[in-house]
Image (tube, rainbow, N blue to C red; front, top):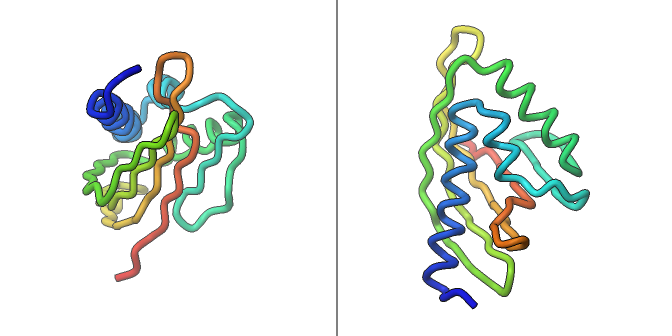
Length: 132
């Protein structure tokens, strides 16, 4: 059994991999972060819940296709580990260029990871816009 400190480091690394895949618009890297289970769920800010890897994958393809540039900086508010689950609550500071326009936004997000097969996988991402 791994120490809590090691597990926390691995969860933080998986979370970083998620945001780097997002910034690089790398669908293969995004695919490596997400669980392929039917119970996976993703809720992009202002959108409906997507269930299962196929719906989630399609949404990321569309986001990557329609976004010229994206940069995300995160501020972690909380991280908790319980058995083979971990969740992070964080602020996403997003800068993106879409259709030649520069947009800045902030979201509050929850990322839930599950440990199986020797690796932490993202099983749930929920981002909600923070209104100015």
